[in-house]
Amino acid sequence: MPGPVRVSKLLETLGINPETVLVIRNDADRDITYTLPAELELPQGVSVGRSVTLYTEPGEAFSGAPSTRWDDVAWRGDRLHRQLVLWSAQGTTLDGLKLEVSDLVSGAAGIPASALRVRYERYVKGDPEPLGCGTHPAQAFVEVADALSSKPVTMLTSDDPLKLWLTLDVPESTSPGVYSGTLRASDGAAHTATFTLRIRVLELVLPPVDAWSFHLDLWQYPSRILSRYNDAHPGGELALWSPGHLALLEPAYRLLADTGQKAITAHIKENALGGPSMIRRTRKADGSWEYDFAAFDAYVEALDSWGLGPQIDCFSVVAAPLKNNRIKSDLLP
Image (cartoon, rainbow, N blue to C red; front, side):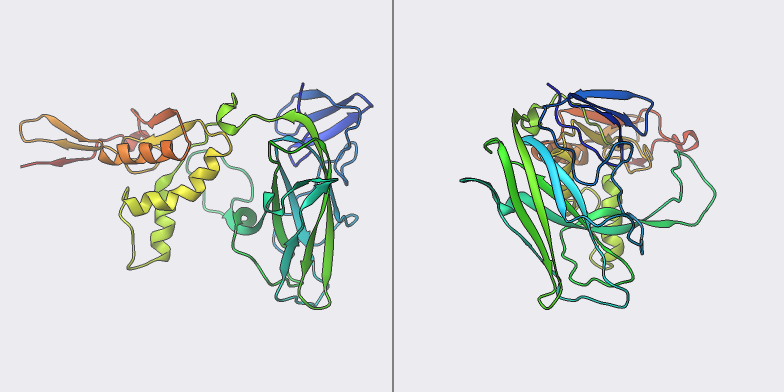
């Protein structure tokens, strides 16, 4: 039986009747019909013919009707996401902002407050329009709320709304039922906003991530994380493929494994995917070659221990661009 419909920025509801919901995925010309339980309730604020609005740009003004409810449907073992946006009145700055999450309860059963993670959306630079691979003329960039941070933001100004990303992990042991709780935002003074969460948990169970048949293969660029760290820590730089470099990767890569990532991206040639090689090639004086797999082994073993794999994608026999398709080697005496 198909799972509950996820209505997000990628899904738009086209039609609804007591037994089915017909949706279309915006980035592909495909209609998908879901057979749903009769008691299904779509999240509040979602209506036929309209998708949920996500706020991603700095200084966005509020539009539409305010909502302080999160109604959703989940399987046991499921994961739900929701964006929460806080606005401040013109000219008003709130400092010392705190968030309080209650347990979600259904009779004597409950989902602990610790199952709800709150992360803070951070702005990153991006292109005004999506671009493909290759070289493009220089152009102005835009800022988009596309990074999630666990570091709390305690100030809210009228210049820019505070964008929060809520993630609820429903324990597999949760009994079916309707669970209710609250999230409270307060500056410790006169300003308080309370949001109600109402989650219907079905009898269906989502298997653990390592049992999923879904094949996720997102390419990894481990040298970029190192570059950003070294740029921010002059004088305290870490060496490429060192234990310190691998330690930088672990938090993000564990998150990737938790989404079902099945492949490890390994760079085995200079400039393959624009990254440095994990395999050192040395041409000796007699013309023979020697290969050092130490960095490759350490990288693959680390990612495997974090739950990624078992597939290993090695890039690449042919590097990109082709004009840089040369082997970098060290000559031994």
